Image (cartoon, rainbow, N blue to C red; front, side, top):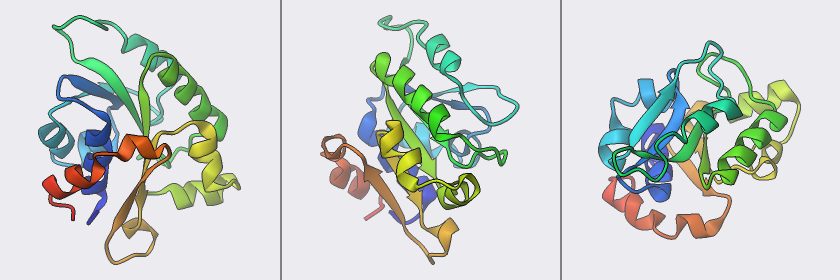
Length: 176
């Protein structure tokens, strides 16, 4: 994709239907800095949780289950976290794994906005895989521009089946 907003939109739209929602923090990049693009283009609602440190915990995911199955409520379907967070804090591999386990237990998928994932890997002294595939993340927006590229972001589907429609979504979102 051309940039971070486009990568996040393509990743999220690949996992969502318009009546569904994305759980994220109130400081998440997708909620604050993307001019409403994720909601406009995916048609899905962002369910934001206020947090002081920029990090969701499994309790937020459980709380988002209110209204599950009720057609009057957007259905919590995707969890989106950012590594490193917009507050400069870091999720440990164990924290990401706990979020993924809780999300998957409720039939949700996990998106990781990895715009600053290289910084997190360096600070935590771990491998990218520890924060993504091995922790249970389903799709990653990998930030090329914040890691020295002139332009370009990668959307990485940890389970390739989740990206079966991504080429169409990418084209329709003007990211090809």
